[in-house]
Image 1 (tube, rainbow, N blue to C red):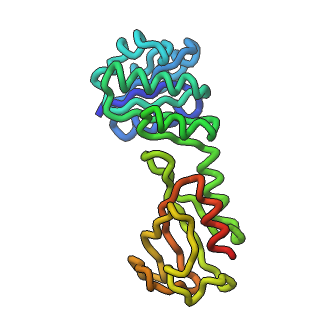
Image 2: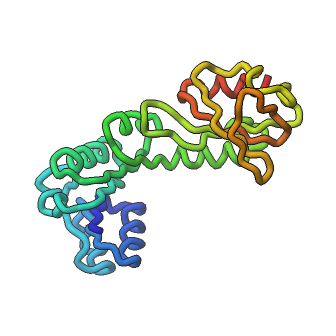
Image 3: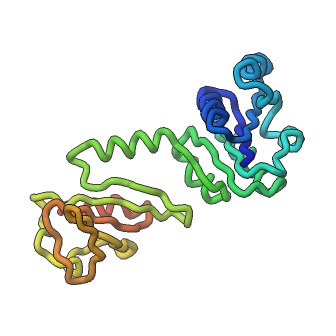
Length: 218
């Protein structure tokens, strides 16, 4: 597998270092010539100087045979251009982009970027899981439209305990796909009754997450 990493900041540096140590064929592209010299001393001939947002640079790097291109620069605009060039001009099978501003993540997905990584959203997700007063946790944003998978906890104070799902007034675009009850995974039906401690897994539009939170808390 041949992997192109664009951007020699801390993320690109440690990513390249790890991939090289695991035996992958990697090429790191970095603009700064001083960094290129330093990285070459550490990694060997797996570093190239150039602007990864330019098609000529990607061509020299052999993007046409790359299996994966990962854009890790500190500029969202550059990361988007890099991934689109790799995808459209060089037919790279999978492109990944670091997203610095979490508001841009949905735009990247709509423009065909296969995988986006927003450190801000990752930290927020861990915070949601760690805060006991948060009844709803965003687990995953799906690549299709603005769909998300969320997890909702049914607390001992929930007014829905003992009620069948058919009686719980959820937003119309919410689909409850599973309930985790202790060590059991349940595929719920309309008559499934909620119990304290249930973890409800649902698919919904991201815009309806707050409505789902309100529906399960009142």
